[in-house]
Length: 234
Image (tube, helix red, strand yellow):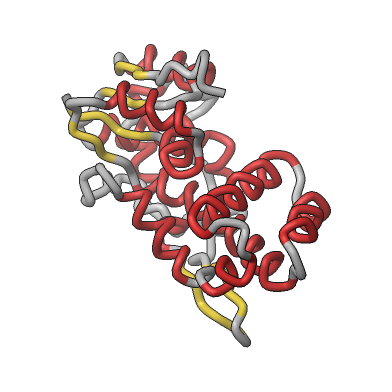
């Protein structure tokens, strides 16, 4: 069976607890796993973007406790939660040696991207040609900068419009009009776009931990949903 891993699962495969990773492995066992360009775009805009911020914090911190305080002061909500997980991820790799963590900060951009592709087909479903998937790291005076390829508020620089129109008959009833998302407004319907990109790519099963939002979409599209059992995997 071919399945697509959504952003929540991709993030948990990298930063989740051992129990969550185990539940994901059980859910996707003996399946051919894929992901999509839109999922990679979301991954870049969350994990990689948060890691850029973490890089600056750790580079400036005098000790691990100071780094923890700086995380709390510089990020809020989901970003703060992800940054704490990234911090734990680094400490698992390099222990509590701040100098060792600092020495390996640059290398971990490649590690995080490598982990996105681990265990999945390297050819991503590309119906959106999401610009955020093409983000890359540049360095300015030794500091990393995430270079994104110019998503704008009202300007489509990807193929979401054509993907939307091509599949509108399938999603009619899930959206209020046939108007395609413009620019950054695609993030308001990101889950739907992941489902369309999956459906358009010929795969009809998605693995996500976000069953609440994905269930009505996949049901409408006649797709199957695989949800890892996190009930005892906090």
